[in-house]
Amino acid sequence: MGKCSAVNITGRILVYNHVALTMNAAGGIGGFCCATPMGQAKVFSEFFTGTTTMNRHLMLLWLLLMGFCTSTQGGSASAIGRWEQRQFLVTFWCPPPATDEALARVAAEGFNLTWTPAEGLDVAARHGLRAMLTSELLTPEALADAVKRKQLEALVDKVKNHPALEAYFLTDEPGAGAFPGLGKLVGFLRERDPKHLAYINLFPTYANEQQLGVSADAAERARVSYPTNFAGVDTNDKTVLRYREHLRQYLQVVQPDLISYDHYHFLKPDQNGRPVDGKQYFLNLGLIRLAALEARRPFLNIIQADTIEKSWRLPNAREMRFLVYTTMAYGGRGISYFTYWGPAAYNGLYIDGKAAPLLEPVVALNKEINAFGPALLQLDSLAVYHTAPLAYGTEGIPANAPIQIVSPGEFVLGLFGKSHQTTAFMVVNRDYNRSAQATVKVGLPGGSLQELDRRSGNWTAFQALSGKRLAEISLAPGDGRLFRIQSGSSRLASPRDRD
Image (spheres, rainbow, N blue to C red):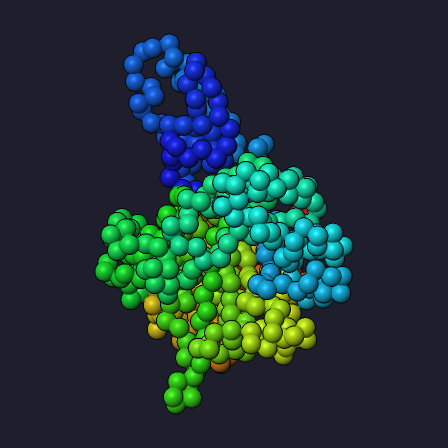
């Protein structure tokens, strides 16, 4: 959630003793603010100075509202309603037509979210899919036009109780100049339909200053929240400064329920025929993860699955696995493939309505994502580390980390748990060309390790921990594996135990 604002009116207006108090969806009451991202109560003191009867009455009202607000924080559905993520999102860009034939395939391929206009919601529901609504009315400009606003109100009223509806698609890659209008639109939708997501996708780190809409001066001010432990990043890194400021403004002004971004990592071979990878993939993952943790919001990564840009190469099955598992290791809660449906020029998962070769490994990955998803949704991302050599924007494993990788190799280590206590970890092979063996030293209490089975989604016995507390983990190229510590005091519920 962004910073409190005394003028951010996105909800109801309360009038008390002729004083208007604005209540926004984040819990802000005029000059009051129910909670910061850390849940700490704050009050603008000017409302409570003096000894007048009205000030005492305002204090009483604030105390009552504080009790109301504490029940509505945390990003989940509440008495006033809020979008709550119930499954790991598996979706795409460029959807197929909303026909029974096409959406039956989408569901069979392991996707759980499609895109459709209102007319396709019933079709999506028939195939057990959630849907992101698309409409030309879902723009900030519609709010300023009396006729279009009424049409948008009617559209929301028509679809908001549909069992397939998950989200409203608003826009892709807005600059910071668009944030105020988008914030109003998100507030409008949150007021009329708070239980569904208003979806916006953000630029990657390699967007320029003009695209991000962030000036150098604004980027300089972002130094106060500068990440100090990222490899290759110093206090004069304009890429990081601009992107952090872009994210800060987005979260403060728009106040989204989900952070979505895209990053396209795989480039065409150089003049010697060697494949080229971008330099900022892990930097982008790290900055998005950091922003998501600060805002207490989930994030979704849009990954490359086409060659719509001339400079891109088409990822192979191993590279797709690398993208999916590194996202999960960083705590991501959604994967979107760019693109699904399109012409030969896109070279996506379907070309002119026919399945492309890349679809088969993507379907296999989707099955694994859906197996991992319920377990990952129960866990908080606590830390992410890398083994040497450290890529730009990554962090090495500190000596006091509860899990250590003590063997050579290029790995990502994601730590997970609850209440800041590590109870699970994911190891990913950063090398998408060669298999690897990671020797892991477990410094947590517990007698054995369990692994999340990628076929069943259940926790299964992996190995007992000996006196040296070492575990050998084999990893295919780009692959990841999820483990938890098994002990009587720290056992996590199985994903399949929840129901």
